[in-house]
Length: 440
Image (cartoon, rainbow, N blue to C red; front, side, top):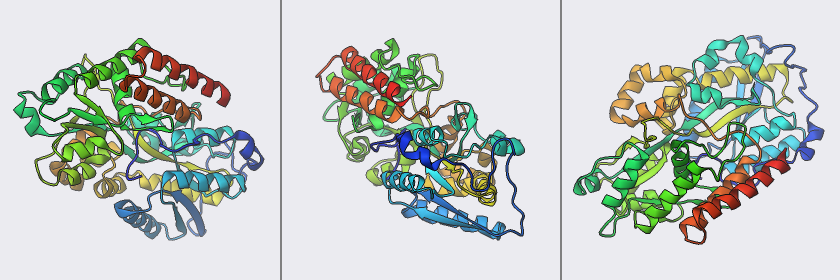
């Protein structure tokens, strides 16, 4: 995958607890919540492993670069990067290592992965670690901080984050006599106005039962803007709420009007580049790919994703976090925590954001001179980053991935005209409730 959506689009996100229970004997070093966070002597040499999927391009080179910078500042700590080619392979490798009782020290995870690991008692709670240094979590955007907890325990630390923005062709908007929409109601009006002469306002991929895609995210944002998110904070699906039905009805109406078109493999990006699509509503990390697709044919514009009717900002946090496994020794845990904190320092975040296109999770990053220079050329970074303060990630529960696939299938069905929005969402709700019951 060249980028991520709101959840990992791979099959089998949940881990069968029975497969892992035998490997959950706890820390080899014996650290637990009653002892507090372990510490590491600067004279003690230790090696930690980081299983990750930043295996190509700027992601690979930048992670290697900042890791070497960390090691230079902490010569007693060696970080071994265990790069995997994609998230599906990463998940398979980490699952196998956990089952064998040899997990990495830390790993890049989605929230539902972490929830299943935590349920199987193979993760190290980070609550005491953060309590020992409150400035660590206090320095994060509120939305990012909130996304790190599972059942009110801190189990994750931020790594690569993004929010959703609206990439668009300003020339096509100008030709239609309209401006970038401020709200989702505005978007419906603008979408119909610009969809003519072979041009479609929003080509999107709704995803399928095997996993959601960018179109699912658009729908989820619309439902939340209507007043009800598709998941409660505890992971309970709310697919057939009035707000959800209204959102899907709007998309179906726009498709009938020729303003929405469905496709696969980033259709918004492709159509935008071909000047046959006006908007690509996608994660902020798509900026590089959209620019490539446009190829200088016009000046690509970026606007905040439309808000609720009353102006309330509604957005989602995309990306993955880092989790620590409790099989590590105390020294490895202390070293890993130091590395994890280094990754979220303002200076590191500035390097990371500029090189990769991900957003800084530490608001102090925006105050740095080099970041200000970067933002002057990429002004969307400011509003995309600020949305991290009040946005939320997909709830970290093991059944959420399967339920999201059910939701994506419902969107496909309704947009294809095979079912009404009400019927499609009711079917998805029933399936999601069964998935939730089976995972609890």
